[in-house]
Length: 93
Image: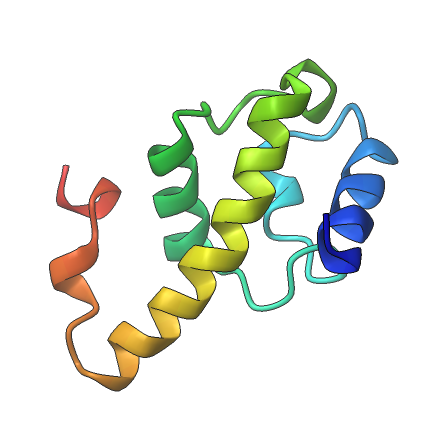
Protein backbone atom coordinates (compact mmCIF):
# COMPACT_ATOMS: atom_id res chain seq x y z
CA UNK A 1 0.00 0.00 0.00
CA UNK A 2 1.46 3.37 -0.99
CA UNK A 3 1.84 6.18 1.52
CA UNK A 4 -0.94 8.21 -0.14
CA UNK A 5 -3.39 5.35 0.26
CA UNK A 6 -2.30 4.84 3.87
CA UNK A 7 -2.78 8.53 4.61
CA UNK A 8 -6.23 8.58 3.02
CA UNK A 9 -7.28 5.49 4.95
CA UNK A 10 -5.99 6.94 8.24
CA UNK A 11 -7.79 10.23 7.63
CA UNK A 12 -11.02 8.44 6.76
CA UNK A 13 -10.78 6.32 9.92
CA UNK A 14 -10.33 9.55 11.91
CA UNK A 15 -13.83 10.61 10.77
CA UNK A 16 -15.85 7.42 11.38
CA UNK A 17 -19.21 9.19 11.67
CA UNK A 18 -18.91 11.20 8.46
CA UNK A 19 -20.94 10.33 5.39
CA UNK A 20 -18.71 8.89 2.67
CA UNK A 21 -20.11 11.41 0.18
CA UNK A 22 -18.84 14.23 2.39
CA UNK A 23 -15.52 12.52 3.13
CA UNK A 24 -14.79 12.17 -0.59
CA UNK A 25 -15.09 15.93 -0.96
CA UNK A 26 -12.64 16.65 1.88
CA UNK A 27 -9.72 18.18 0.01
CA UNK A 28 -7.21 17.25 2.72
CA UNK A 29 -8.12 13.59 2.14
CA UNK A 30 -8.85 13.54 -1.61
CA UNK A 31 -7.43 16.61 -3.30
CA UNK A 32 -9.22 17.54 -6.50
CA UNK A 33 -12.31 15.37 -6.06
CA UNK A 34 -15.47 17.21 -7.05
CA UNK A 35 -19.13 16.18 -7.22
CA UNK A 36 -18.84 14.45 -10.58
CA UNK A 37 -15.80 12.41 -9.54
CA UNK A 38 -17.43 11.62 -6.16
CA UNK A 39 -20.62 10.33 -7.78
CA UNK A 40 -18.80 8.30 -10.43
CA UNK A 41 -16.54 6.64 -7.85
CA UNK A 42 -19.41 5.74 -5.55
CA UNK A 43 -21.27 4.29 -8.52
CA UNK A 44 -18.25 2.27 -9.67
CA UNK A 45 -17.56 0.71 -6.28
CA UNK A 46 -21.24 0.25 -5.38
CA UNK A 47 -21.23 2.30 -2.19
CA UNK A 48 -24.28 4.37 -1.29
CA UNK A 49 -23.48 8.03 -0.75
CA UNK A 50 -25.13 8.06 2.68
CA UNK A 51 -23.04 5.26 4.21
CA UNK A 52 -20.98 6.43 7.12
CA UNK A 53 -17.26 5.75 6.92
CA UNK A 54 -17.23 3.39 9.92
CA UNK A 55 -19.83 1.10 8.32
CA UNK A 56 -17.89 0.51 5.11
CA UNK A 57 -15.96 -2.79 5.21
CA UNK A 58 -12.16 -2.47 5.02
CA UNK A 59 -11.92 -4.18 1.63
CA UNK A 60 -14.58 -1.88 0.17
CA UNK A 61 -12.90 1.17 1.69
CA UNK A 62 -9.57 0.14 0.14
CA UNK A 63 -11.28 -0.28 -3.24
CA UNK A 64 -12.91 3.14 -2.90
CA UNK A 65 -9.59 4.82 -2.10
CA UNK A 66 -7.83 3.08 -4.98
CA UNK A 67 -10.64 3.86 -7.41
CA UNK A 68 -10.57 7.51 -6.36
CA UNK A 69 -6.93 7.73 -7.39
CA UNK A 70 -7.42 5.83 -10.65
CA UNK A 71 -10.58 7.67 -11.67
CA UNK A 72 -9.11 11.09 -10.89
CA UNK A 73 -6.23 10.50 -13.30
CA UNK A 74 -8.61 9.09 -15.93
CA UNK A 75 -10.89 12.08 -15.47
CA UNK A 76 -8.03 14.47 -16.17
CA UNK A 77 -6.97 12.55 -19.27
CA UNK A 78 -10.52 12.37 -20.61
CA UNK A 79 -11.04 16.07 -19.95
CA UNK A 80 -7.87 16.96 -21.86
CA UNK A 81 -9.09 14.84 -24.78
CA UNK A 82 -12.58 16.42 -24.71
CA UNK A 83 -14.19 13.02 -24.15
CA UNK A 84 -15.19 13.25 -20.53
CA UNK A 85 -18.93 12.80 -20.85
CA UNK A 86 -18.69 9.60 -22.85
CA UNK A 87 -17.08 7.90 -19.82
CA UNK A 88 -19.71 8.92 -17.28
CA UNK A 89 -21.72 6.06 -15.86
CA UNK A 90 -23.59 7.57 -12.90
CA UNK A 91 -24.38 10.85 -14.63
CA UNK A 92 -25.98 9.03 -17.57
CA UNK A 93 -28.59 7.44 -15.30
